Length: 114
Image (tube, rainbow, N blue to C red; front, side, top):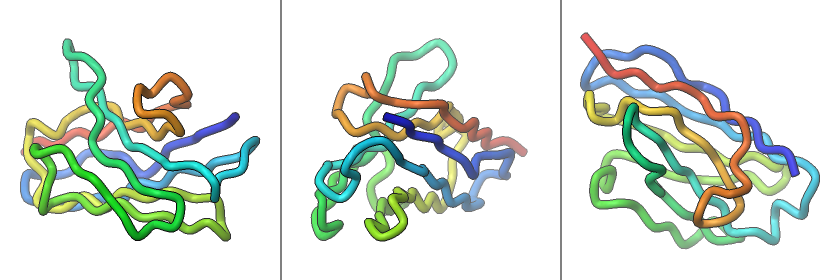
């Protein structure tokens, strides 16, 4: 299983970023997928979930109405569109194929700061 997140960076409050996660080594289209994040000094937080077809999604209250999860099963790729970013969104973001993030691969740093 390989999961490689990308697309992070430094953005000002109120800005947007789109994260991508390239998946390989398993049947991506048959797995629910998850985005998780870990802020400095804090535990792992599940941010969003998406079903296999991409027509059912779940969000943490902290990101609801600001983040959008999506997937392209033909490209084995998971996405997270992040809008109206806040300083508290600063974290390393990971994708995983399990809710607990045990399968998470290399994350991508998102820093929201002016």
